[in-house]
Length: 298
Length: 263
Image 1 (cartoon, one colour):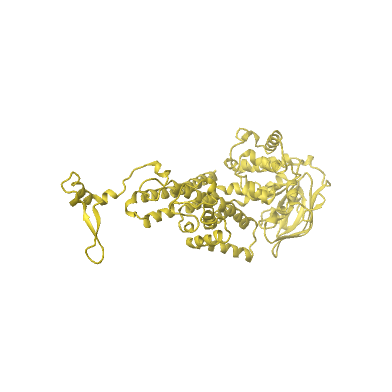
Image 2 (image 1 turned 135 degrees about the vertical axis):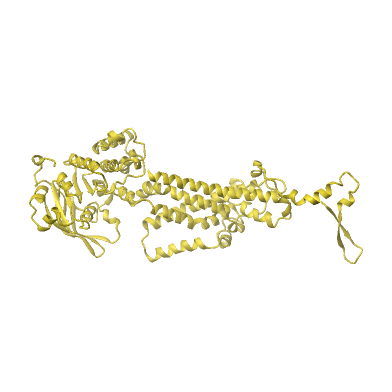
């Protein structure tokens, strides 16, 4: 904007020459603009605090200077909910098995250390595993898709869900279980009608925290679900279509986009949205926990 | 003391539970040793003895609650209504429906008062709402709790006082319409007033149910029971009519215990 780009071919090689525009426009009505812009350029490009709700739903376009982050928000919601739909039933069943049915044999302690190890695996490894297993081996989709990303994220949060559920189940007073069994309830019926309802708030806390984690994770979806730009994925397409998502696209438009410096407002907006989503989920978890504490006091 | 010597049934009535050389082991430790004991139907049998004497273990063996403890096994026979409780064909769920239990600490479920009492009947097939209401009311009346909670059946049972919660647990056990009630120190967590109410209830329920009550309170055993068994270190030392056991104990150990020389 401040310089005009021209090429000087007087030598053997072409040389780029930047001609200041204020010289070109000297004497015209526009002349005072250029020193002003030069002095305040940084400030002008710095985003101002404003709230524009449609930013969250407007479609996102490649240049990102205009438009919103609708596709990214939708993608993050799909991926987080999808991951939970897979990880929660699996995690609760595993926790019930560990707590109520498993004996303390060698196989069980091996399985337990597997779960703990899974919790310590770097997330990029999950991403590569998801690509290698879900996409290239099992072919859940022909390429990146919301489904493949959700499956990968589900694996990532599974240990957290299992541990939270196990702790919640273990915290249910033994007396409840004895009371139900003494009335002639079967073990499975006791679990369904007494233990799970009593453990539910604790399980939910773990689920909500895991959901925040799934929403924020970047590495697992790079190879399995995320694309830098795309339309809002329709619900009917989640099994086959990839999607932009807040976490990965925030990285993308902050580092690899052609106009990194010019789209600060979108970067800030996207970061704020992601932080707020995760914060809201964690607040929800705290609220659930507070309610349980109150209820247990009687 | 409840004066009811005149109304006592003869000792020759039907035996409801009979232990024959019955032992319970926790791993290698023999917690109950070769006990022979006949609990008469329709009467209140108290089981007393110092802590760790195996009295609770014996009681919990009757409805097989000890099955929950890893490494617990039994030897000998324990006959309930003509059938060995530890026989191969016994369905523990059916057994526990016929033998209700009230625990040391009141353990209402974190559900509404109504749902607590209805839990047992709902287990056993589809009961119509009207019928369920009736069972809940009758059970709460039997447990002398109806008047206190009839206006708040939908409230969470965790809001009840200790004594109310224990009577709710009793109502919950009665709602299944068992033949026998096992009570494992049912008043040890309650204040004297709540204890007295539970004791009144035991006396009222006598005759309709066979009741076995474990207690470390000898006055309680004397007040509510027809028969008393004294356990010491896993061995049944003496079993007799309550009055005889407390006034003319045959064994030296029993006498030492009831006169407070140990335990």
